[in-house]
Image 1 (cartoon, rainbow, N blue to C red):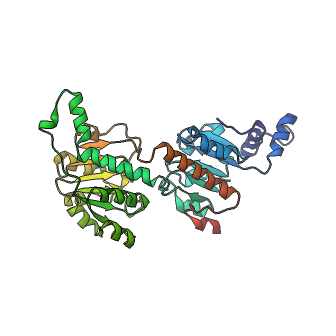
Image 2 (image 1 turned 90 degrees about the vertical axis):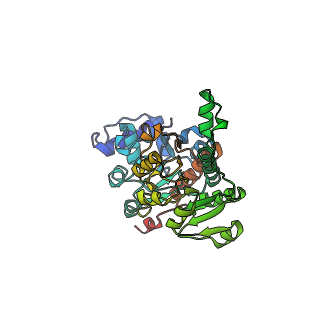
Image 3 (image 1 turned 135 degrees about the vertical axis):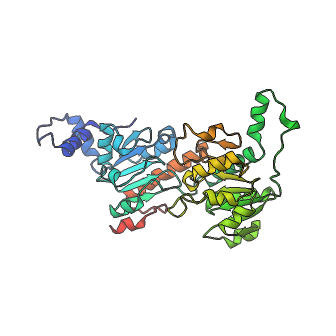
Length: 366
């Protein structure tokens, strides 16, 4: 684990806590020389449970000459250990994933912060308004693992719709279920896509190969893609009523939070399936649980949840749902690409360059 050098830490402790008077700290010459040789470097804190395992990403930061501190989990900023709290206080850049919310209280712990570089496609865990007010640029890596997420969505959909997991459990229990087990045809089905970003578009290309009719609900239609793949745009209610398989790809915003509730689930066919690899908060979890229990919908494939990690849930007892631990984008290539891009975003900001991944450009005017 990389840590700040001792001179930097002790000097920072002095500034932070005011417990060491000027001249009372007797530093060894080699520490003074090391610190002064990097006087123009910045401090980067990496809060991530995966970044440190990716040599390409680590090498990108190591080559920058900045001071790097790694915290190998997604600990809330207020709960960091003292040494890591100090690193946060001194940090000009934080690289992190989708962990605990970064709100005004969290920002107050990082008074020198210039950039939060997310190695995820979403940014809903950051209070963007507060970041902008404080002049902190926020970047993400939207679309970096679109192909990986799309193929996972297709696999999750097939697992639940074609009852692949059900068959696996049956054969392990000594039941040859092919005589009684049946499933819906995916070929020729109607697939509903809600949200039409890069992941959804990559999914549509795959759905088209299955011979599916594709309905899309979005605020940003793509006429060229619609023409190429036979996409029909429709209202949310129409998509829910007509689709055999409903796939959620929408970003989480105040408007989309719990956009799928009891009313919306009630519009779906009893034979329909819901697939969600976007954000758990898009769906009213209690309403979904009730719909699955009562057979109001046939089943669901869920990779995301309102509370993560999901360690205990009534969903575990249901046979008509397939659950995975937010892993849609977690291929080796996807993780490396996201982490390296986030590192470069952070380094760009520290060098005075605005990355194309900047979300809140209004922070530059603060």
